[in-house]
Structure formats: structure tokens, C-alpha cells
Length: 75
Image 1 (cartoon, rainbow, N blue to C red):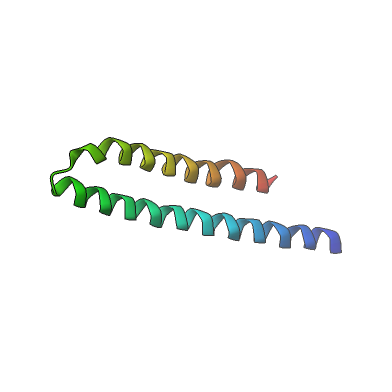
Image 2: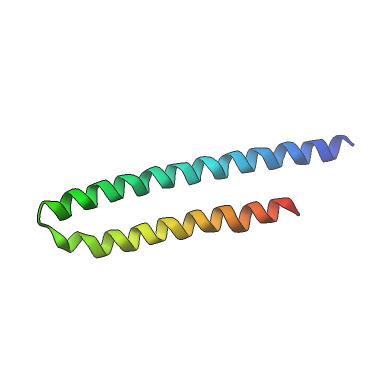
């Protein structure tokens, strides 16, 4: 019995770490949006495409972390 409790404790630690990483990436994505809008409104439209690609990469990373890893922890 003690071994299953330890596994649950490990799972909770992994979930907490994943949620911290996802939160950090979400804040990074908000900063990216703010910096891109500031540059675009300042007349620099060359920043838009690279920022959109970086934002898409952040989204895919967050989706992958939440979907695949948390689903594997359920099993």
C-alpha cells in the first residue's frame, strides 16, 4: 500500500511542475503579444510573422504538455 501512495505523490509533483511550466509559457506568450503589438503599432510590421510563429510554437508546446503528458499520468 505504501508504494501506491508514493506513486500518487510523484504524480502530483509532476503535475505541479507541468502546470508551472505551462503558466510560464503562457506569461511568455502574453509578453510576446504585447511586444509584437507595440512594434506593429510603432510601424514595424516585419515582426508580425516571426512572432506569430513563436506564439504558435508556444501554443503547441502547452498543448503537448497538457494533453499528452497529463493523459499518460492518468494511466
